Length: 526
Image (cartoon, one colour):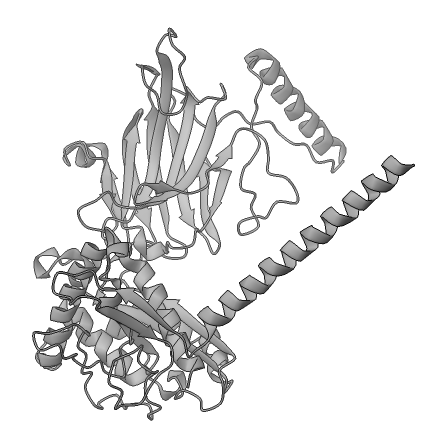
């Protein structure tokens, strides 16, 4: 009895100490949250530069002072001015950077107040050099934009925004047809250019023949153990690529369609689909002969994977198919309407011609082979139909012809003036005087004029109807002045664009996120 009482007392003491310790941790956490989130707290960041004095420090103030503040903190939100007219005041933008006299150059009401000097610390690591280069290029672009006469700069035309100048002007045919000889004249690249990408309803048809298997000692689709013989592999790839999306690196794969006749790690023929950007693959969609589950989401009403015969006994499957055909004919003769499901084999056979049709639907891509639907792949975030400016064919495949139809004859990024609707209905209202309940920051590239216009004419118009909701695009300048001139007109008229002080760079997309946070804090502290 004494032992039980002592044990119970020890347990109660342990629980009491645990509760006291937990209470102490929660109290410490609450103090830290209050200290960090309070708008009157200053966080000192050590300068660490060679030109900094002893004990010098840079401070990030979350309490915004007036115009006469001695030390520049995080700037306040843009002034609550009326929307500028289409031909209103010009955008005067300069990046906040320390000069020889230590004075800061001003930012206009169109630019974020993000102070990129705060990243110039030893803790910024390798990001510091990339940010410095992008900010320097952005400063030059801002300066060029200030000195440009909009009437003297021609609007960007087809092929100039992303193709690299007038010499790269691209025609946008409604259809394209290439034979095997014409494809061979390209030097064996197997790439068909689609100058203006795809549109809803566009389709590409490929007639080709899969080759037989070949040996691979280091295959990418199966793992070989030590001492095993080389794997026999037969596969090919049909890809939609964004040829103009990036420069100096592999283009993104908007759609990767990979039939594996032999050599897959599963030991069966499969079809794998995916997307890839900057060597980062998404989640693969594999079709291995089983039909998609009834509860799985469809693509335009079609299943992602159709069923095909998985048995290896050709005679058994031939007998099953013939039996089902006979049953279907008998039911037709006697008037019964019983549904008979046919078992189709894997759509690709070595040495046998196939006709593949890839079409762009409302919700995704659809692939049919020899007239039968095989797979559907939903669109992935970050890719649009206009980005698919190239069709790549490679692997164990002999291509006979390629036909593309219902192609767009214009591109939203090639001729932005045709996609911007300069109507006062879509202008953003001035910043509200009352507290903001919801702030929406939208990351956008400089040349995505059509995408921004699509947002304005849909859900953003509903946001503007509420006085305590704010939505803004965060955009960095483009490398071409022609694009920046149109972007400047767009920002002046609609009043919903906030410039980030660097030249657009995908690797620095986190800077736009920081700019969104800075802008939001400025709204909350007014």
